[in-house]
Picture 1 (cartoon, one colour):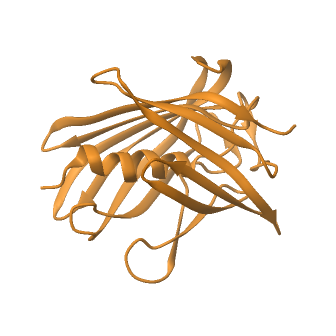
Picture 2 (cartoon, helix red, strand yellow):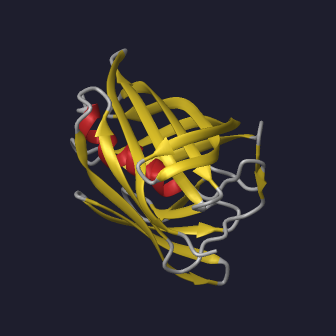
Picture 3 (spheres, one colour):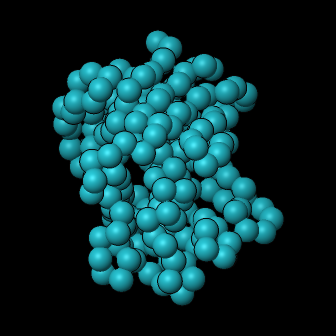
Length: 211
């Protein structure tokens, strides 16, 4: 049996935050970051209400319409290449090669739906696992964070993780703001053996988004 709580913090929450891109209260046609844009979040365990630390995403460089970003947390750093249509390219966590995934697809508008598949290495034994989800731009919503109040689009994803011969449900909700050009709040819930094992929330505390 995998320890889903530890597993999620490395693979569910981080992977989905890495996968997010720009959204607006109406429609966004493509990713529009600038070099140096950054976003910092606090992480809270929704069971205990205790802070678990901070995470930060930075746009390192832009070349030929491709953005190279770095996501930093206590466990390490993760680099992604992001195309303007929201497609992410990443090295396979086990073996050679790369894979592409979309947890936000552009242009973005209310009612849009898509599928997302993400590969990961299970922390217990390093074997290859995956997360398969159906995503939808659900609605416009105003949300509050330590960094302020924002008009956003709410993106909901539901599906299953598969690892070490086990399967469980996973759900994520993300809120995107045109004012900061990225997600301002993110929640993830994951189930193991039919029991809710993980419930984490990330909220924006600092940002630098170039107009």
